[in-house]
Amino acid sequence: YDFGAAFDGDGDRNMILGHKAFFVTPSDSLAVLANHLECIPYFQRTGVKGYARSMPTGAAVDRVAAANSKEIFEVPTGWKYFGNLMDAGRLSLCGEESFGTGSDHIREKDGIWAVLAWLSVIAHTGKPVHEILQTHWAKFGRNFFTRYDYEDCESDPCNKMMTELEALVTKADFVGKVLTSGGKSYKVKTADNFKYTDPIDNSIASKQGIRVIFEDGSRLIYRLSGTGSSGATVRLYVESYESDPASLGLDASVALQPLIQVALELSKLPQFTGRDKPTVIT
Image 1 (cartoon, helix red, strand yellow):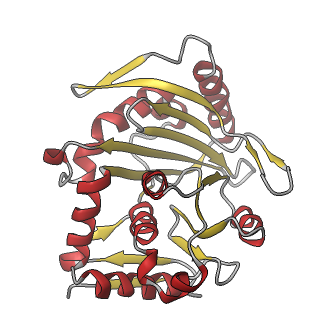
Image 2 (spheres, rainbow, N blue to C red; image 1 turned 180 degrees about the horizontal axis):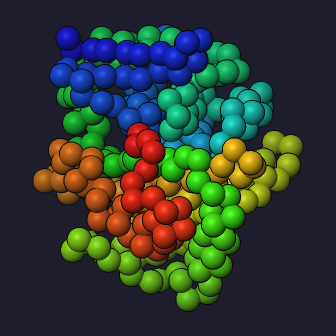
Image 3 (cartoon, one colour; image 1 turned 180 degrees about the vertical axis):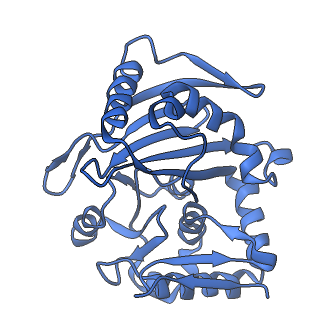
């Protein structure tokens, strides 16, 4: 089959697949839809406003926004942040790396709508899924993306890891450092613990995840949740940007390996968690 789609139980999350289980990351799915909204009748009527993604979501859609001269919003994890922007008429399309996609036709994520939107793109372009992605990468470059979840970890060491990591990356001399692994080097552009000021109601959400952003657009994100008695979950998001045509077709696990190694060494995650591999890889 040339197209496949999967949903969760209530249909608000979606996964897009192409020929021979060609996997479309949620970040790429959002970017492709953003670049083809003109093929969807709803947006032909309403026009396209801005785009938004949750902070951990790969930044592929940011490049589409820049090319199309549209607003792009980077918000904390949580659909309510998208809702405020929709209510204010600032947002047409949004998504998150956890397979949620939505538009301003309703205020919630809508997996069935996302799949119908993809079918509209396929009908409009006349191309199968993998060719749509290859064309997109050739124009914008490719944001390789993965998420590592370390579940049921001891809370105290994880809290210590995040505290030490934040202290390290917020030092004045961290910006400009070059981190190297596997023959690849990444120069730090900026680093922080993500803080969001809602442009609509001016509410502030702080400490939403530690970010290390590199000069080439690659990123590392560290988030910690569930630090109660049941154990903590550490989430590591790794995003590596490639514009070299020779690298666009690489397997994601191969393309990301140098930056994954940088992420693990920088945070000392294996030492703090006592784990040599994640519980889940997405």
